[in-house]
Image 1 (cartoon, helix red, strand yellow):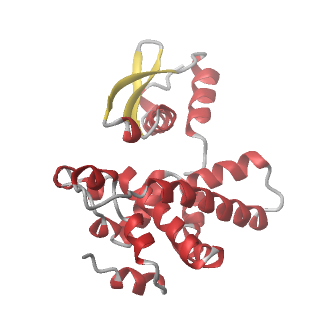
Image 2 (cartoon, one colour):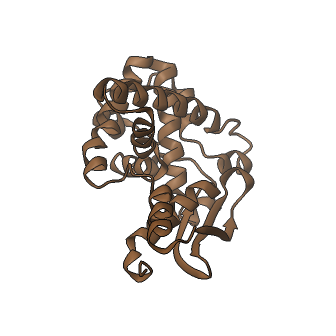
Length: 232
């Protein structure tokens, strides 16, 4: 049995419904391997994702009354994207509490960004079901929305794909395109690697849980190395 007391101490409250709590920390692979485990955390992840998006949207709407919808959308995306949530999961040591198959655990599953991010969303879903929207909001504000200032300072909210396209078109007159380098994993947990190209020149590469995410990561990588290709 996992010990959740350290987690409860960090966040300042506990979840009373043990069934929901265990469900939040059960990876699909554990169900496939152990016939005694019937439910994994993907339904809670679905719920938690919606709760997180609602709370983040309300927070940004209230905080920035003059910002247009597009800027608010970019800020929200930066707050709730996978690598940000994975960072939160590591701060809370959520990977240590996961139930997963021996194979998944052996492959480092408890430290994979997408699994950790999904676990944060599932945990939010569990908090919402057991304790209500206010406790879910308390958790989200303390552990996720608190990163907003750093996100703005580091420009993480900027749409890398649009910025890359505008820059390459304005300076070089070239529209970027993307190609799939590889894809791995089961259908429900695909990991894509895509490369960004300017004509035949590969200028960036990125990984994501969808082709869209991988394209954004590849564009961001291209921007980091722009001095190598930004020659009109």
